[in-house]
Image 1 (cartoon, rainbow, N blue to C red):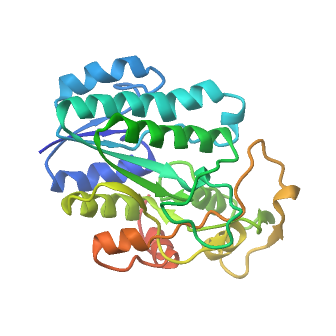
Image 2: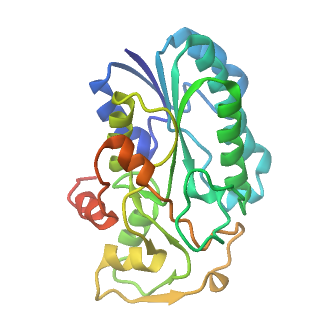
Length: 274
């Protein structure tokens, strides 16, 4: 099988490039080869590559910056995936695409299931939701994986930010809940789902949940000087959902096994060299 991986240099893309060869020949593209800010070039690139499977790990992920760059966020997170979906449909290829917990408003008191009605609070969330909707509307074969709080030993993420600030007094938000999800977990389970011919929409996150403060505490240890604060004490351009816990039972059934607790994944990440 010929596979096109887009976003190879991102934290999830890096992991995917190492596990996707188990499925076939991988053509991995970064922004210099395929820039999602220019969706008009996607069809020709896909036609030249001739993939049977397309895995899209590229996205505009600057949540706060998106508030001042809504057109760019929409172009990268919605228009480009729509063009990719159209190209995938023409080839009969499966498109795997990653979305986010930020498509929800956080007002639900329990974890969000796949059929809950999205209501994003931010430009970023709205752009990712639009990407989902355009892929579905295209009629292409697709697997959309919503995930949350992605981190890993490479790239830019909360885990590495906390590690870099070890030993310093920190103030971290304690009124937003979600499931920290490692990039390795995402990549490995993506391959498993493809192997099982799963399509549609799934919430792919580990089991359990915490707050950003709880995540920071688990990263740095009980002796770290970390003060819990409310979201209102940490001004940000974009609003975040208070509850962005995603129900992962549908993904667990598809995979045929329970999904690991987020703390297990963090311990695994610590053992991974950068």
